[in-house]
Length: 249
Image (cartoon, one colour):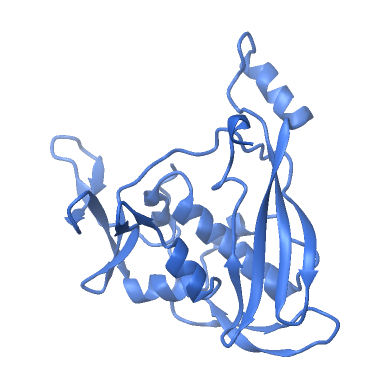
């Protein structure tokens, strides 16, 4: 996992006037996204976006994709790129550090962030509906993945790994399902191949295989809705964070 921090300047400053897509152009409330550093911007600009979304909606998609991938990808500490954690030096190891842990509930530990929970919550709700966030924010073993402790963001110490099947050589594809003045439904199509060498396959042969094609695809539903606050994603996935193995399709 990259440890390079990519800190948000969370002062509200980038105002996006979002408009509804459909047969009629309808005025929509404005939406504010947190400005990001150049390093974050460079990563967001690599995200493939649906061409049937307007420029403002595409920008929301990039930010939602980046945020979702860091929150629900391989491990919760990836959020540090967006919301830095409190580092604690490891005794006896010069230059090494771990994260400050706090107890929250009875089953496992949480990492403490340096960011106010209100800033984290505002960033999430700038692209996701309240319903989606409250459902997806993550309840595991009866406890939230992300929580507010004395006004500070904390996150459960969780890891599952990722990137075993997603073939990044083939951009995501999209299929529009429905587009009205207040709702856009589409399908995300991710491309997959086992990324480790197969039996008897060299790393060079593996690389050539991944470049030459993919072995299977998987589809994910995504929905945008027009709320009182502007356009928000009410259903969302990324092909990497939600990748599937051949055994699961």
